[in-house]
Length: 233
Image (cartoon, rainbow, N blue to C red; front, side, top):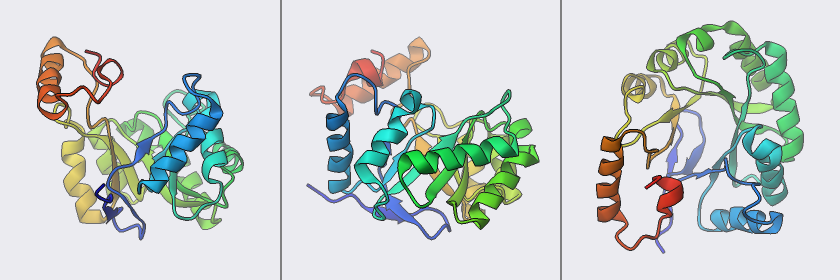
């Protein structure tokens, strides 16, 4: 099996595998805890070094199992997210409290990448409290990189140009590049790392479903991928 390649995550000083593991389903009842933990460790054995989770995934079970699987291992990079405590917005206290709780659950000395888990709109990103909290946590050594998950191009560009984030998580796939298009050149110019999600997309319109069926016929003719979960086909 060909080894996964690593690449720099912007100018952060961290290198990660080109493919990461999204952990939003980790901890659900479809597998036992032992099976989830074995899967996480197997992914690491195969060269996956970055794992994306959030405090709210599987009602906190995702972070819990990642903590049990990896603890403070330094050969993996954990990216987690804090949830807003008010509509699409964060108080400074909520970001700090969320980070400290995730640290305990993940069993790590510091969080590699801490992201805000909201819309990433210009309104949300321009609110100074989340950025002040991230800067303080980084200064205290509790997080390594400041980050935000964004679904709006203007919010992402604002965060980049105002030095509010070291990393952004964006949606980018064959169908949906809308909010990523203005972010990509700005991130390249300022050395901001990008975590890209939804490579295979989720079906929305009938046209998109037909496009994804065509892609699946080309790239997965033997049905290795689970079409019911990945493509809704």
